[in-house]
Image (tube, rainbow, N blue to C red):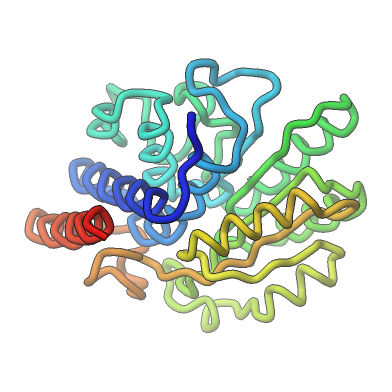
Length: 281
């Protein structure tokens, strides 16, 4: 596949957002806010950065990905479908007991999912294990993970940060999605985590701060991560929860709630307008 850049990445990310919100609406259940905030990072990974083959999801040399904040599966599923791992039409069966796309990523049933996640705080540990295994086995694949800023309140995350630094896992890159909101409100009120960059840096990670909706910054950070030796890399990205849907943006109430028919119509109009504007420019 030819890599995507610039506005082509932005168009693809908004297509993924639209598919994710559509799937959540059809299921009458799901997590739109965080799915929308991390869609740009996921799109950059699968359409530019990662060495993967959708026709051979179990390819041994592939790069690995762990969605540590597993409730944002709708965004991951949408990106995987657009990348060709399974038909886009399958997204219409999100959370259906008769289909393979459960509410959280399931490596047993979803092509392209490298780790089952959903219990917050555990995904980074799995990613550390994958990166460490690659080191021990002399393999060159890289491992990527996406964490939530609410999720990093979980203690096991920090144990994983320590372990990754101890083993100098420079083949590991973790995005921290800092949208500032979680299910109970602002992260600053629930359990303040700032300054995230300085804390992670103190755990001996290489840290890069970016705008998580700027593809030039995302790709530059990923390139810097590849070039960093002797340390794992954390990309701390500032994002907007509910990005792209006017009434969802920066609203904690849209952490885990499905839009009704009227709300979905508005979300669809918002995202289609953005896609059209990008295509015309």
